[in-house]
Length: 334
Image (cartoon, rainbow, N blue to C red; front, side, top):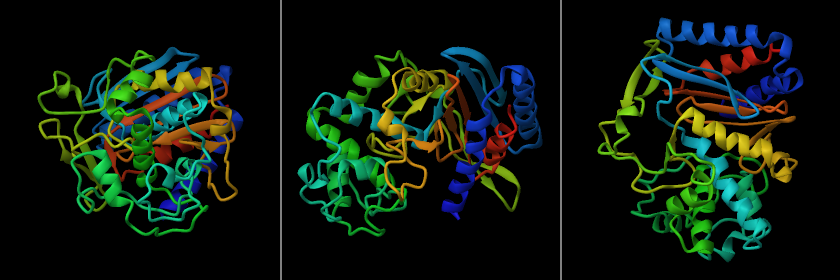
């Protein structure tokens, strides 16, 4: 089912890449998005949301909906993956690694196929699938956790696409091996600080000065047709360390800065489907024609268009259908 949904997303975004945001229908397009999101909140489909659209780095549209305010903080989950991929690509540029390096060069304990390279981790063709369970593989830090997990035998086919959080946790660990720095600190030094992402954080505690701005995370109960809270900003972060595959808290405006950095200075090879079985995934991004994008577990999404526009949609509604509907709306843009 998950694979079918991803293919649906790719098909929808393909239409977006063809039509884009035409200048003659920008206002009507924004109105349709605005009214639709408003109706979702009014009906209870979403509790809160924020929509941001930029054009070459300039804000075109920004609005908060429901129980939130502009510039709130959101747990972006897997939208963290492109940030970790960027760190890997930077290290390659600096000559500190090759994308063809075998994983065993950095983690001899790796129990997967010995042919697996950094490239396979970037595009999810390592032979591992499904999401991580840190409780199953305990560790109080990234090294212990990844070393523990890496003893697991692969559960998918080498060099065929199978989405896995483990891939990016392992990439995060490789970064620490090469740089001899903690992943969180290195992410801040090389991405967040240079881009001026001053309201992006790799860690959370309820005592953080900004904790009250983090939105409650909900899951959509299909039977009851309602959102049910499963985490609030009064609780600790669910992981005991920064993983690199998820974990960043940020504002929509900050993530737009990151997206814009890719539009301004793209790593071209990362924005291609680099394996025949890549299933629409490049190096850290999902790819559909000239559009690159990523989604987050709780319902967030970010898209970048060849016209120079970005669309960032933030909400916390796990398991909801809103983003498939939202992308369908985008397919009607001209």
